[in-house]
Image (cartoon, rainbow, N blue to C red; front, side):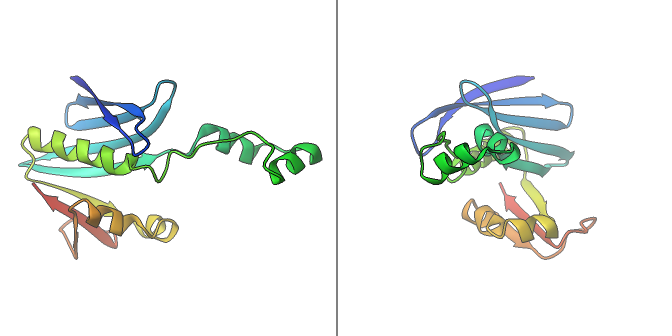
Length: 158
């Protein structure tokens, strides 16, 4: 089953969220007109329990390509003085929060009683804002849940 809905980011840009439910797995993709800019996966564990497996907003593709290409001295100087190609970041515009709201609404619609997710130590070290991000959207830290080996578990009751 596939469901599509539209959301807007903080800049007013209209984006498409497609939810594809295949058995117990729900695959969420976030796209603008030309490319995928974010994704998330959730697993319906049964008995009203959902697990957020992954949520990610991608940086602009041009930024990643520029970082991986060797630059000539001329192009490096143009970029240094702000004359090089411009890029826009997909992050820090409310996309992760908007996608998380879609996930919560979808899980609630399908009978979920709560959603939990694990933040592994590597992710927490690279992205220290993850726990405050989840807390901002109603999740709470759970000190321990059976079967979880990660350092931090977040959970929201629906």
